[in-house]
Image 1: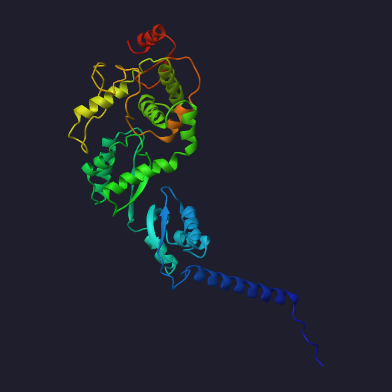
Image 2 (image 1 turned 30 degrees about the horizontal axis):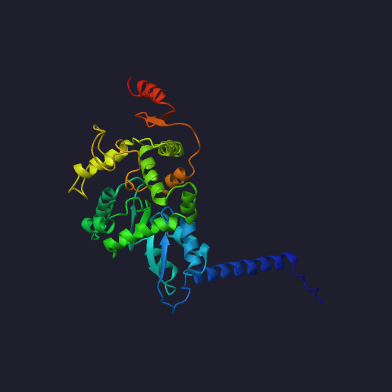
Length: 340
């Protein structure tokens, strides 16, 4: 009787590995097909998301997953990479829903945005903000009224928060003003307002000082120091002598009727005796209102101004600031750094 041939154990190992590999491949294919499907085909409820500027694929995938719009972050990242779409995804605001599959969502994020971005830099006055907004809205084909903006923002100089905003294309001009104003309230904590009272100042006075420092200090490091110079002067009833306050007054006259157009709203000061309640050479008090819209860091610089005995400061053309305790020291700085 012939002997049965034994199957070599290696054959079993190979078969097992083949089955395992097949299972892995099959599982991977199932996973890949599944992650591309909608989260809920029947759910068409709109989910509004915002993709911040500078967001990469990883961040975008996280936002989508957090809003339950995709099944798996890795699936989205793999799909986008496979389709070479990494550089096509755009920041902005989007309306999506759970009935959309991965391909639809990815494609949507590469198409035109529903909203548009506008950056309001620190230190701009209302009229300059009006021009920035007018030009940005025009570039995006959205209506904007400069006159409505100026009317709605009357009395809000200093409180139109400088920030990068995402505006919907259906927004009205008064709503823009409200967003800028409400953003100020959101960004500036109550603790800062309380601290103003602790310093013996109203918050409006802090905002006026912050607007002066914003225009006077070129570098961040000088802001607290310049703020203390101004506070020192106020303490002894000394005129602040801030050129930017005269510039504000001169600009209001020189550019009257040109709001929303190119105009030098901060002209060079040639007459320190220009009559205006904003001219801090003619009074030992603060101007009646802020002269620009400062950023949060400048407000904090005023509230955290370090103690020192300087009463004067002088900025070189480069922006470097020199400080002095006496008029004689200040005059020496003028001679050394300006009259050369």
